[in-house]
Image: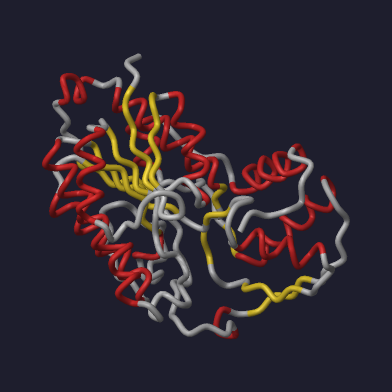
Amino acid sequence: MKKWKILLVGSKGQIGWELNRTLQYLGEVFVINREVNLEFSDETKIRSIIKDLKPNIIINTIAVTDVENAGNDLPNTMYINSLFPKLLAEISNQLNILLVHFSTDSVFDGSSEKKYKEFDQPNPLNLYSHSKLEGERMIQKNCNCFIIFRITWIYSIRRKNFVTSILQKAILNQDLLIVNDQLGSPTWARCIAEVTTLALKYFLTNSIFKNRQINISKIYHISSPDFTNWFDFTKYLISEYNKKIFDTRSIITPISIRDLPSKVKRPVSSILDSSLLNDELNLSLPSWKSQVNFFLDDLFASKSQSFKF
């Protein structure tokens, strides 16, 4: 298989860090990060880097993900989640580059009693979700060759997320109040990276990519086939953690999403239907419980209980 040139935008976050490992199989991976060598607001430099590198693929993993505080710095939220994807879309379209971008389950309002499919009508409930949906629309409007992956309830050992926060509290035997009436599919970041890499392998070896004649514009949902709520997820996570790594004594109490001290409205159900990914590419994620066990096995094997924020 031909070795492709891939520009990974952001490798310090949950998905970017995993992708920087899994993408090595596909080709030569070049990374740009705000923390290391680039301000993403420097559009002239962004254009220059991409034109000089001439990658076959750009993968954008950066995002403002703090739902609670997304409105505190609205210009930055809208730039990173909406306008920066537009910039990448324009450059990718000009240079015939495949653009890969990650969006979110919360572009939907949670009112459906069914799993959300890719063509269902979005209706974001908060500023974060609105900014992510605008990012999707900017890409669709300005780029002829893209793949948007919508992902859901992500966790990893890196950065602050639900799992790292819960485990840190459990290790200290702090009691936990967890929402039991919000539904979704917890997803390990490594599974997202692996599925993304396998999807790219499929498209890169397909005839549509020969001679740089790229012609793909798709949205896929990446989600496990089953779902749960935060309370049941937490009970299972702590139970398995106690078996594998360290015996904690936290008391876990269910609460309603209405009792959550939050400044923003969130969807009560953000269950994604990822059957399109399976039907077209023969790719699927393990159950959410299997992912928890894979994650904890990896955590135990690392012989570390520290979390990378």
